Image (cartoon, chains in turn blue, purple):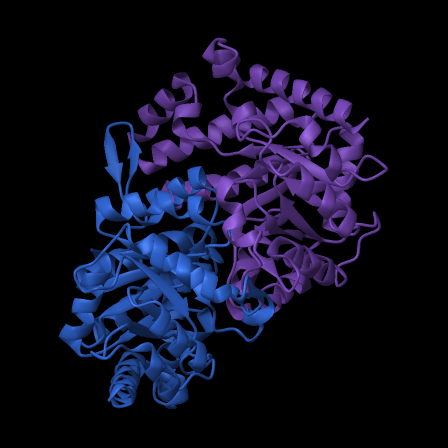
Amino acid sequence: MALDRLINAVKRTGNPTIVGLDPKLQYIPEFIVGKAFNDHGETLEGAAAALFEFNCRLIDALYDIVPAVKPQAAYYEMYGWPGMRALAKTIIYAKEKGMFVVTDGKRNDIGSTMEAYACAHLGKTKVGNKDYFPFGGDALTVNGYLGTDGIIPLLEVCREFDTGIFVLVKTSNPSSGDLQDRIADGQPVYRLMGDLCEQWGEKLPGKSGYSGVGAVVGATWPQQLAELRAALPNTFFLVPGYGAQGGKAKDIAGAFDKNGIGCVVNSSRGILCAWQAQGCAPQDFANAARREALRMKADLVAAIK
Amino acid sequence: MALDRLINAVKRTGNPTIVGLDPKLQYIPEFIVGKAFNDHGETLEGAAAALFEFNCRLIDALYDIVPAVKPQAAYYEMYGWPGMRALAKTIIYAKEKGMFVVTDGKRNDIGSTMEAYACAHLGKTKVGNKDYFPFGGDALTVNGYLGTDGIIPLLEVCREFDTGIFVLVKTSNPSSGDLQDRIADGQPVYRLMGDLCEQWGEKLPGKSGYSGVGAVVGATWPQQLAELRAALPNTFFLVPGYGAQGGKAKDIAGAFDKNGIGCVVNSSRGILCAWQAQGCAPQDFANAARREALRMKADLVAAIK
């Protein structure tokens, strides 16, 4: 089961970090952007070439110490179809290096349409007599607002192709409470969504004890993280919000179980922009990312203990 | 304001229909698919070429009698980046023919990431000194589970580029009640989401009385449609679920206001597969779609009166 693979990768590296590949052009050193524009012009293709080159060099610098990456679809989609091609190529490259890839698309729709998203991101698409894996990630983030029949079609595809999903439960942003904290039938909406994750996860059990249906719970809500960890024993967490959004390692401690597993913690800007934050030479950007990833690993590991 | 343009197009054609461009390969006549495979092989590019050709011929047959189309992103994304290119080309083609285009992506994320989706679908992306409109639709469907700060960044872009959004409120699928019908603080979650639409819409007022923030409410829930129409006087509705999903014209009557406007009703399979349902020659598929669109228009207009 896919999240067992992720958990094994976390254990192998001793690092519960997932690096968010959200490559805005302004995060990318000029020597990469300039070359891409030189080759392709100031076009969407040029931007996409810069994104891909930046990602590859980051992956090269991180794959032996970080178990997983999470490309955020929006930052590729904003460069149109060339951006989506860069997303697909990035996923292939990261998987070739042995990393677990969570495509952060937060996709959602009615069941028949979710089958199409499952083809795109969790399984294959048939064209005539040939099969293609259009994006080919190991897992996809999804939004459960539409309820059970928007999720079930994914689980069958996940079982067949050894992929998984992460459902938004309690998101890291300041306004997440507008809906998620409202009390419905005696408990907050995010708890209802968490309970649905446990229920959906029964259809995709894992050897680790965690199912193939994970939950997104923000580092910015330490109390809810601990509450949800206790309430959802079979649901693995993807925790955004560390670093740039304000979440600290101690805020995340409650997301780990008694064995020190139970979640991966995302950092995007903190690692991608480490070269700017550290004030080092642009050519050193990948090393700066590695230094920050090692610092973050130590920070998290200390907080677990 | 963008939804004023949609409402004017509905009035001009006398038709509150929006055609869902959800082109599965099995909906497309063999003479189109065969030619595309002949030109490009049984590849994602070949599939995408068939999708685009099918869409263009449908748009040619419909643009003078139907005000709007709604391409569903999932059915393009399942063909990878070539599919996304077909989506972008379809949107351009429909707009050139004067149709209003709602990109059905149900995108959602935290604010900073929503800015990237806004660049992709509602505004422009800057690359060096050049501007690009990566997908360029007139409106985008979005999911409001993350709350206000996931929506606000879109509204500024909508104002600048004369585009709009439709927020999922009460979706057409059977399980929509899993979350949306739960009673939170005395009212169903879908009502809370509807109230947020009214609130967000205040930032994007329209001349028609309807704001630039619409709501998705399924034809499969006639009672909630009428309830929400009364409760949300400034929120225009996008109503999926007519036809294949079981919604009838009489079920939708409550979505219209006293002036006979207030929503557009989506049909996808009913129109795209009309040639199969009518048992006519594949070469006649576009005419079959037009006949079904005219039948649906008459069906809806009768229900309004």
